Image (cartoon, rainbow, N blue to C red; front, side, top):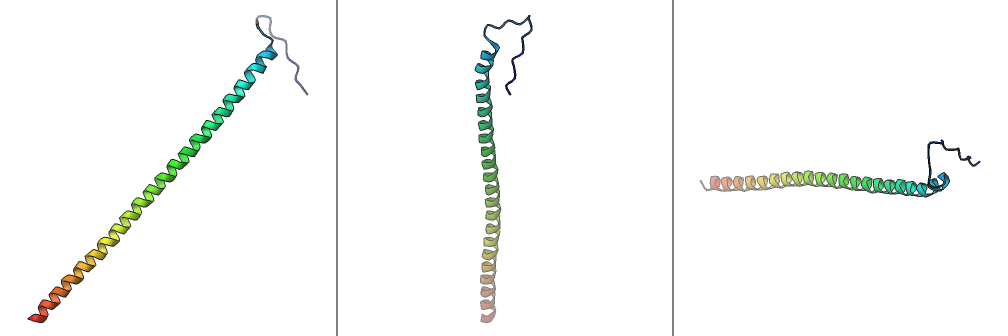
Length: 94
């Protein structure tokens, strides 16, 4: 069912037929809504990418700290072992 156009109040003057005005404005409105939807979609994708990269950076930083701590412990154990060997060698000479 197609709605019948209503009569305009007498104090309104249209230079064009109201149906013609609606037919020219409606495509512009639809195009604007589609453009807004596409822009929101792109913005959402970029926000998701930024969040993902932030999480990846945080995880990489945490991993680097853990590896540095593990490396330092291994290095400290090696230095301690060398010192024990030197002390044991010096004790054996006495």
